[in-house]
Image (cartoon, rainbow, N blue to C red):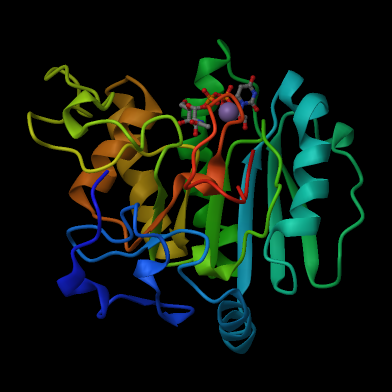
Length: 277
Ligand SMILES: CC(=O)N[C@H]1[C@@H](OP(=O)(O)OP(=O)(O)OC[C@H]2O[C@@H](n3ccc(=O)[nH]c3=O)[C@H](O)[C@@H]2O)O[C@H](CO)[C@H](O)[C@@H]1O
Ligand SMILES: [Mn+2]
């Protein structure tokens, strides 16, 4: 994975917490070659981020799709644990996209937190649900979600929060280092390599492998979703287009694999308190 070069470390700042502590984790990469910070537990001060976000009077959007079986199977736990861990103390607006609005569980929300349910058509086969997310997100960002929120995070529903997920995760554009791939050699990463695909990355291209959690300002996400929608019309997998986008438009911040971890992966010293499981 490599280690952040010392020369750059002192310059590394976070938009919410100010100076970061890249040395807190000597064994992991804490910045990218384009100087974006990689947020690991211990590299930032959560209290400063919290205060900064309150001062900026932010509303933070969290989008999630819960279509078909995923609605009853995952949504309640996702929302209940989000209430415990996601941007606690901030104004939050959840956007749940589902084809079954009446079945959305009634989760008790803290003050300043709202839940909006938007109806979407059920796509078949189920893989298309995942791909159709980009189109739906793009429309929502151009509508009420875009007016209500300053920053938005987009997540899978088949997971739950297990640790504090605070404003240190916010930036103009945010990508996450995929838990399964962050230790892989760059050339082994599963980017689309078929040159016939619009998502193809050439030899030596691609920085990190991303999926699972992405976000940013409304404007940046409009750009990302527009890119993926356009590209998806050519077909192929949404995740490949997401990765191509982040190769072309470098994210301002990266989230460490802790932010979306899988318990199926063997224990790793650098993974202490995962935000999502
Ligand atoms: C953890 C992780 O790496 N997740 C990525 C992986 O998802 P997964 O391989 O985890 O696929 P998945 O089945 O979780 O589908 C992605 C998401 O689509 C929604 N959904 C899907 C099917 C369905 O019947 N109903 C429904 O609501 C739901 O929010 C789900 O979480 O690959 C996808 C590619 O398409 C995305 O890149 C995901 O971010
Ligand atoms: Mn998933």
